[in-house]
Amino acid sequence: MRGRVDHPLSDHGWGQMWRAVNLQPEVQSSASCPLPWDEIITSPLQRCRSFAEKLAQLTELPVSVREEWQEIDYGDWDGMPLTEWRQSAAYQFREFQKDMTALQPPNGEPFMQFRDRILGAWQQVLDRPEGGRVLLVTHGGVMRVVLPTVLGMPLNQTGVLEIPFACLSRVQVHGQGNKQQSRLLAHNVADSQD
Image 1 (tube, one colour):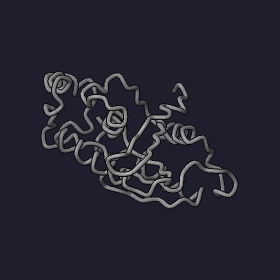
Image 2: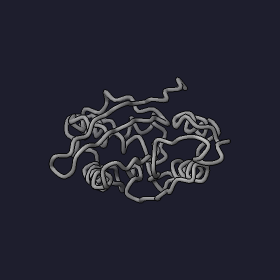
Image 3: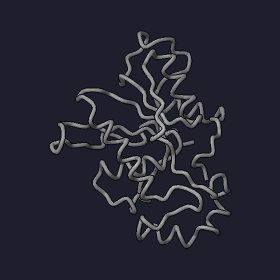
């Protein structure tokens, strides 16, 4: 379970991230290749932040490190092997699939609190002036809140979404306030089969 456990990216992970954004780390500046973003927002956890800062350095894009884009805090479960977690949390996870308020990791962040944090951060992105293009470098659990919100699906039905490591999704937002519409343009664009 990787929530707030702050593991660095492996060499393989770095490769997945570069493939996801369709860039090579040898890129020297944004002048050498057109970029689809105007800025980068990242989680402070190093598996996101290190990549986001390196990408920002190479592309000369501004980068913001934002606490609210962190993964859920799994508390006592953080760092636990999945096989062990499935045994110790099986009942709670089954209940969560029926009712999302049921996931409350011991000494961690209750799912509803996590959901509210992510939806608040997402709303800040939506409230930006129209036309801005932002790359969010964040976590799978975070995307299991954002993508269903965009798609209008219940959050406790996100098991149908495949969100692998280094998954790149593209969301387009039009309008302002209550006339705002979001749509998913692409998902897992850089699926590298690894």
